[in-house]
Length: 270
Image (cartoon, rainbow, N blue to C red; front, side, top):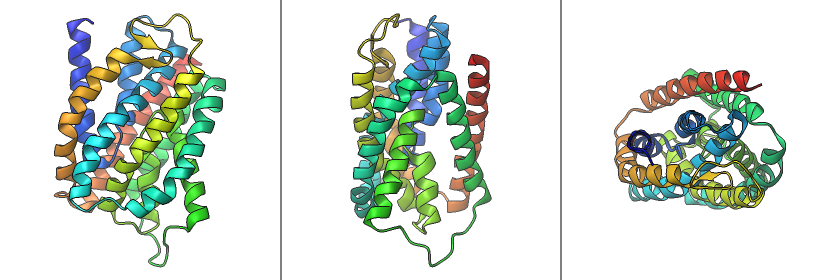
């Protein structure tokens, strides 16, 4: 691996880890645009580079989720009852996304889909709308459906689910710090279920870059993971020192920038 690419991946991992802990992100919303850019510069076709960026991003969430959730758990921010209720749906939704929809849909369409849902999440966070005081998280059946929605969308855009899970939970009157901590915990089952499907669906791919196994670019995954697990706990601690409104605004501005980039990439690839 060239030194420049290593340094770019290392910087990405450092920032991604901190933001994963700070906002409950698995990091996919940051990594997908960067990885697709790097893979494109390596000569990987646009269509394949988008899909590989999504899957490689998802694979790193296995590491950042464990690192950040430990700190959130120590600070009492993880709602394990919600993790238990949402995980079965997440597994089902992830399987549908990674084994079927992801393979059938073009990379350009996935890039535009990424932009649409990230833009919606940014709008919800920026407006900071207050939910009705009586609104609560749904019961078992509702959490199964909510988990399926989170898992499917996460698999299609390569994110840990925070861009959907955090707004959904806060809309149901889950405190923002609990929503972020719980979202970080959900990142592991989301990543594990999706990666299993992606490995199976990418076994017969051709014209891959060096170090790739199916849709996963191993060098990118390993370098980003090594750096991100170090900085994720620092972000998690910072999350508990920032006021709620500022935290939401940081989240929304970050999402708006990344959505615009992926909209542009998707339109250029069509």
